[in-house]
Image 1 (cartoon, one colour):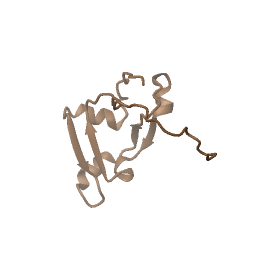
Image 2: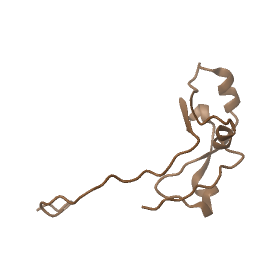
Image 3: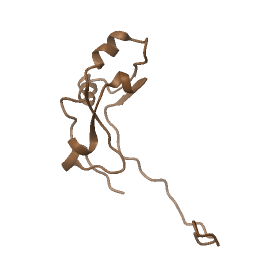
Image 4: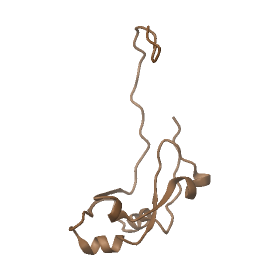
Length: 105
């Protein structure tokens, strides 16, 4: 496991907008027929950042951002301004037969 710091969001991203709100966490209901004014404001195509198992800050724009229109992609948007790395649960080896998948016994 490796804990990394994440670069600040790009000014042309939805993440930048959410961070700029100054609100620590929120939920936006952006379903069709709900909060039409908000949907219209968010309709401008912006970048959305995806960070998964692999994070490559040196190629971040090309490897972790994608152009999107938030209200056309999601029914809701959940925002947490600050998070921290998940730590693994303690684990121990359980005795038993050796792993044989996919070959069987």
